[in-house]
Length: 219
Image (tube, rainbow, N blue to C red; front, side, top):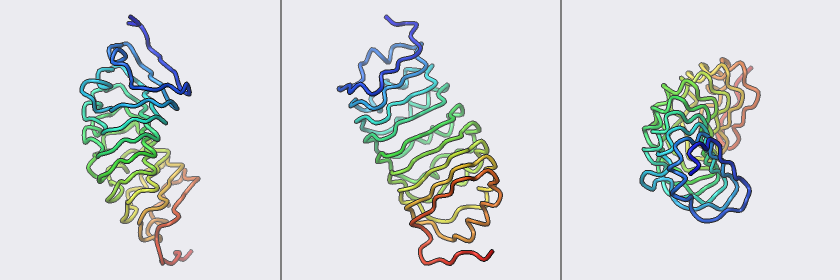
């Protein structure tokens, strides 16, 4: 009955269909890696993923999953890596994400998520090092609470509908190495450069298709 199974990795196998219900009864499972298949179904189906309370890493990237990210997924309190890249996921991110203090990596690139990211309180996510929501439909501004994640090394919100200014608090991110704001509606390029002076580890800054008509700051 696989009651001792801790790792299941079956990526790039062209697997089809939905995740079998029995897999959610393997309470010992810590690492579930099924990227680059053709798996369908919904993550918000009652009592599915959330039953795997010992999961540390979950990678279902490059599949055909649909639906919303359920509130119940935050019950996987040991989860450190959440990778759901390139699916058909929709809706807002659940506010319960704020309580997921073990998370180190959130990678939700290339889905159809919507809503304002300021609905999430990131201030308690002390271990978060990667937050990537490239190519979705998020709106609003970058939440100021994300600047409390002082372990952050990569922050990518490109290809969304996000605007406003980059807040001074971004200077708190001393470990930040990669920042991408490409293809949004940010303003005040002078303020952005001034505020980034505190990001002493920054090695890549991508800000194309923003700041329309603004002048570069004086040296």
